[in-house]
Image (cartoon, rainbow, N blue to C red):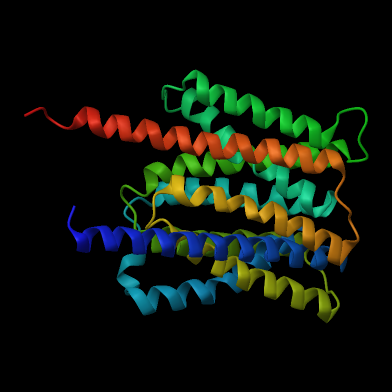
Length: 305
C-alpha cells in the first residue's frame, strides 16, 4: 500500500470513529428527548410519526448537498417495503420500551440486536456461526437476564418483552440491509424509510393522535431532527471498517444512563451496570469475530500465484 493510500485509510478510520460517536450522541439524546415527550403524553405511534417527519428535512438536505434526487429512485421497491416494515416495527417497539422502562435499561436491552442478528444469519442466511460467536451470544443473553432479573426485578415484564422484541426486529433490519445495500443507494434507503414512517404514522395518527403541550411537541421535534442526524452520522461512519467503529456504539448506554439520571432521576442499579457490560462485551466480540470471518473469506478468494 502506498503512503497516500495508507493516509486515506487512516483518515477514513478517524472520520468513521468521530461519526460513530456523533451517531451515538444523536441517538441517545433522541431517546432521552422522546422519553420526555412521552412523559408529556405522546404515545409510541405519535413518536414514530414525529420522528420520521422531522428527520426528513435533514435527510433531504444531505442528499441534495452530496448527490441528486436521481439517486432516490428505488431499484427494488419490494425490498424497500420489507425493510421499511421491519424498521417501523422495530422503531415502534423501541419507543414503547422507552415509555415503559428506565432509559438505561431500555437502551441496554436494545443492544442485544447484534446478538440476535447472529442467530438470524444462522437460521435465515444459513451462515456458519462458530463456537466463539455462539459464546458471545450466550454472554449477551446472560447480560439480559442480569438486567431483567426475572422474578426479582422492579422492571415490568411487558417492557422487557417489548424491548427484546424491538431488538429482534432490529436484527431483522440489519440482516435485510446487508442484502439491500447491494442494489440500492444508501441515500435512497434512508429517504424511503423516512417516507414510509410518515405515511404509516399519518394513518396511525388518525386513531392515536392527540393534542399535546408545546413542550412535549418541542421534545418530539428535536428528537426527530437528532434522529435524522444520527442516521447520517451512521451512514458516513461506514467508510471505516465496521469492526473498528462498532465498539463506540456502546457509548449510547453510558449516555442513556447519564440522561436517565439527569432527566428522570433514574439511578442505575448494580444489575443494570453489570448486565449492560455483559451485553456490550458480547456485541463487541461478535463484531470482532465477524471481522475476522470476512478477512478469512477474502483471503480464501485470492488466487494463488
